[in-house]
Length: 392
Image 1 (cartoon, rainbow, N blue to C red):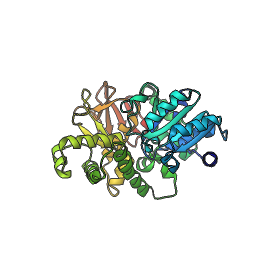
Image 2 (image 1 turned 60 degrees about the vertical axis):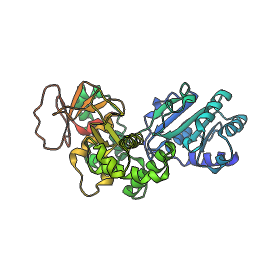
Image 3 (image 1 turned 45 degrees about the horizontal axis):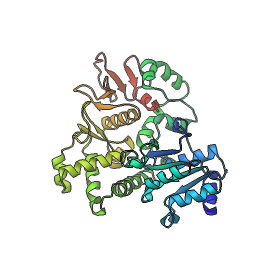
Image 4 (image 1 turned 135 degrees about the vertical axis):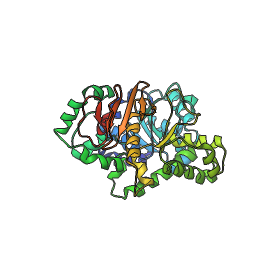
């Protein structure tokens, strides 16, 4: 047990979160069982350690453990929790909980057996905490940690502390908001860098970002999808090939029959793989307002713009990049659906948006909201694209 305390103390002491995530204040920390999901690479481990550092420091009533530790090959979470509670433990932080077989059943036992113990755990975005783990459905509170927004990236790069704005605030007051921001920084000086490498916090590491992202993407498939969905390793090349085909064909409706033929599997399996890739936050599925999975999506996009550059490092389509950015940043708190002929996306069922590349001629249709790439400040229903990165 003492070795876990030493590791915890070292990790907490050396944790330096580059940006304090807003999720820290959105979580109700009084709940006894909290799950924090997120795609690989967005900083879930750092988030847990930052919570420990802020709330407890080196107080031994809080302990961080990682299910990668071989100790848990021979000991149960329940037994460990019992020892921890006996020594005065109050808050147990469990990283990568899905690495432990039967984790959900054991967390339920801990919840029932140790009423004074709070457990906060991290897991993959592929996990369906309530739908697939019925023993936790009525007790776990689930939250999602996303990659950096453009606002968070800008704060990090400039030392500013700009707050997030609601979509309603942007629609009604974007000119005043933009003027306030522009009086301090020039967002467009940083926007292209964010589109290329700003979503994943590991761009801060002194390693090649592209190689790091490729490694992370492979881990999403090999661990998050295959392990959690219990898919045999022999099907890994098919899933990777499917992702490559979807990514390089650009945002459009998938030809499921052709994809099934290419990776030599059934149409139903292709659709299941597509859903798993979406759960892993590698792709986004865009549907008409009245449709959803298992129907075929009207458009498949990569989850964020950084991923586009990982597949097409030499030449990318500007329209694909900015539409991907827009959809990804809106997706956190809003519904994003396919628009009609002259509309890129329909947001929350009644807000039509047209995402415009630099220099695109605008007809300025009444009722349509235009997101303008490379515009510093907007007017009326024309809003700079970068401002939608301030939604979280």
